[in-house]
Length: 119
Image (cartoon, rainbow, N blue to C red):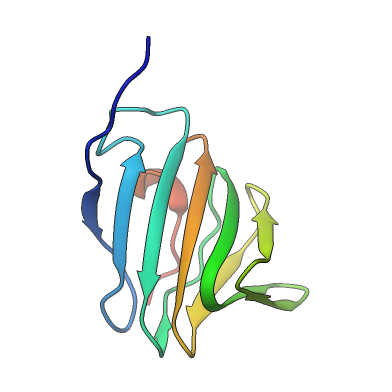
């Protein structure tokens, strides 16, 4: 049965400066634990602690540039590009010039399964 989602839930994001997370599908907005889909609006200069999540994360950049630092390499993902981070892989995201992007997590993102580094 279809489920119409009228609007996202705004979720507080960790990081050095505020970032807007608009969760459309996921544990908070639609009680879906299988997948989460959120739009991120990340300001210039934002960075978050590293994390080793228990979910796969698929990210598509809509505007600006997202950086994804892994143990092996730092990736620069521009508008129109995407990156996949596999569960169990350490990553730290940042947006030195600002970015908007869609993140899809399988299973859904939860604070208990992201495993952020201590700041």
